[in-house]
Image (tube, rainbow, N blue to C red; front, side, top):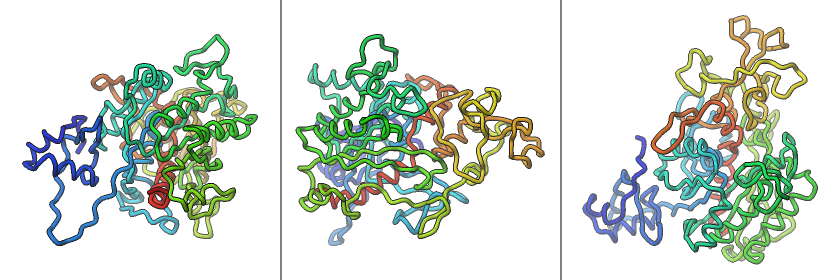
Length: 476
């Protein structure tokens, strides 16, 4: 059942359930009421929260782990946020039972549902109204209110917090996540890096680049870390950042200097999404920052070494490889990924019905090739129209899917749902949506951009589960 956005106080829930406010507060502290949040010292519970079962006298029952509070920056439509929440379906071929101890369950033939994690998002932020619309539409099912998503520039939010002494950011944050804008570091862009000609709100600037330009927004993520002082922060960006002058080293140094050197920044790695069951050739660089004074002595010692022992390494182990073997499964092909999807003119799913009608421009142009069904998919870009790869080309345009063409299937580009499948978004994650309340509707063109900008949720889940596994080993 879809959850409402409404939250209730302990006093209101006490009257509803017929138990004392004190008992409800204890339930909240023990993590027995999913979605309960503490704001300015007061517990707020989802209006449709279920009353926990009483513990039987004399019987020890393991209490649920206390939820870990996540503050998400540059959230977009929520790919990384979904990974940290968990509880979504993926292809069975994307799950390697030999490489994980996840408790999955079959959700439908060929699909498994991942478990809910300990993480719970209490704050999200982006400047795109369409991103908020998609995010709110999906994340309401986790009991997260619409008010948790701030449609403001991170620069403006930090200034509001600092200059007006307002508590913009929630307290008690365990993890800050953020994929700071990557357009200025991507090999597909102008590669202006720190010297971006775009402002923090996305408009063109005519003055000299400053700390408020799009290419330096990681600095503002650093400021949020300084304000909230989480036990860990996780930042991600495109692989192209690694070979753009000394950008990676500068960002690592800046992150490690937050709170007067209070964080260990683990040496960065580039993760290949296909190594984690994502049917896509997408590579992302990951930054881990861990607060020193929250670490156990043995963890602090291990993370301070030049070579971190494997049992303390925050990076998840691969579950797939090109051809499989040694406990790894072979990469997931687009053929498996797209199986079961109807052709657009037969589908009732808006995200499958719509696709770019941009015509074939010739093999010399970007986005003019068709996907290879036997291999992983291309990197889904935050583009639309002429840069979206073709699901199939005609024989005249050198298409290779002869059997489909003989069946009368026409030349067309990938649909939004097909792009979302390649990104590992579940089919109940909707991108083309009508206006709802104060949230704007999302067009097909905007939907392509949102899907392409996102972190693959399955990659995010691998990161989240590795951190969850290490949490009690790291921290007091």
